[in-house]
Length: 194
Image 1 (spheres, rainbow, N blue to C red):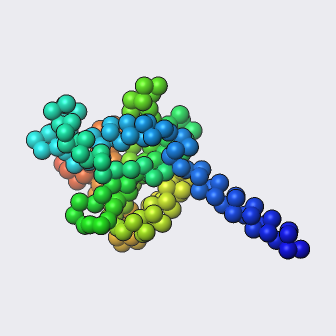
Image 2: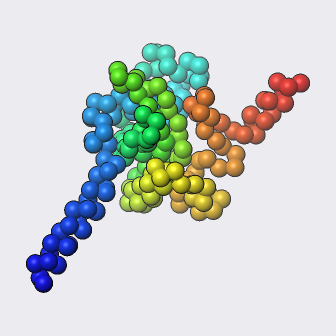
């Protein structure tokens, strides 16, 4: 009886640890690939370099800024999607509150040369302590990979506990690969229509 209990406990632990490794980025991307993804994606996810615009942010003039930003990021989770890309969960140092981090969850795709060919952010969390971030961000990541609706985790429903963006005003524009303001976009569209 005792031996069978030990075996059951061992198997349970083994199965639960396998589940956690199912999104370990090292299982899907080399360390070099992870760094390359971060290096390219910071041009979309970090604040613009001083004097840069969205049109010029890829100029090599700004490499110094994005190299510095890259050091504040890590990839915490990664999982292949059904379209040949990956779901990701990255975190970065929160600039205004320390020690705190914020998480970014979404999808990306790379080509054979590790060039980022697609990038989309599903959510950005509020800034929070490492413990809170790990628990909440991984919960959001798992729901995202299961294609569950994350609306209930937005600020409107959960305050500053989970998702800061998107909200009723801000959304991620897939074509431009950046966060946009619905109100500004609606004003711009009326100007174009007139």
